[in-house]
Image (tube, rainbow, N blue to C red; front, side):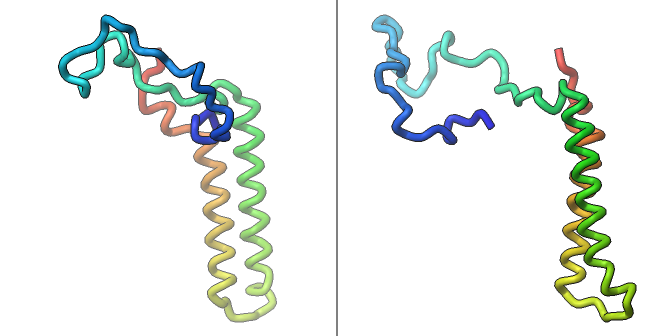
Length: 116
């Protein structure tokens, strides 16, 4: 999703690596230069925060998928069979998928900090 670890290693070109300036050597190699320190933390991609149609489509899609998994796992219970560990696991997975869709729709992390 934008991580540098997802690129293949052969795409790293040594000629594109940053070259240190000659006058910027300090006595303490562990202390970064003031110009090298990032001013703000790394921003997460704003794909789901700015695109309402993406959030609605993926959120309701996950809720629908979770409901389907849950209801298919519940079908043997309606026929009178005793629930086994597999049936309970399927029902739990269906509930988790539905909750994941609700989380995408509500976006609780985006409301936790002010975007400037």
